[in-house]
Image (cartoon, rainbow, N blue to C red; front, side, top):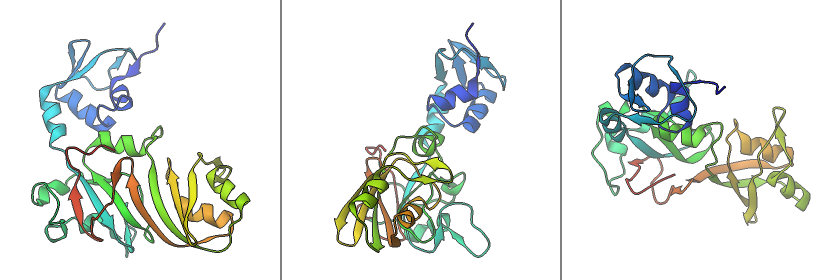
Length: 243
């Protein structure tokens, strides 16, 4: 007998929306399972069922904002501790990159805008903030396979064995890390390409092989690059861009 699954969970697993959004759509009667409207929270369905969203849900998702920010050092990406400023504070009218396309800043777009991934206070580079649960799950879900690329300036000596360990073989917090792609960019800078993002992961990886990180910049997430976006400024994710 096929085990039923909660509808909101299945919607999130399929990338239709976040679980919170799924519950909201279900309450509004905007979800159809095998052609029938479902408006009761907690409903369980067959894992192979057909799920369709009403036009209203599609329109709401299309209005969701996703922003690319070139985060400077000194800002935290997530919930700030006392005395620290969140990167969200940089999303203002006068920090919108004038060379980018998209509508002008509106305070309403800040509602529900949250970082999809972390970039620690001592690091700079590309940070994604979004209102779209589908994008957030794609970038930071447990099963995400999206690459993140970093340029990392280091101090110390690294032999071939240490470089091999950076690519595969290290563990953090009792968990083996996924294989990475790590190579020398120049004599004092490494290029890291990861598919995960544990807290201060690159800095801790480097410490394990005797290196000290003195500069860290994220330059790419998936197929989206930081490019020429100036430090401290932001732009919208373009319609032709996909992570």
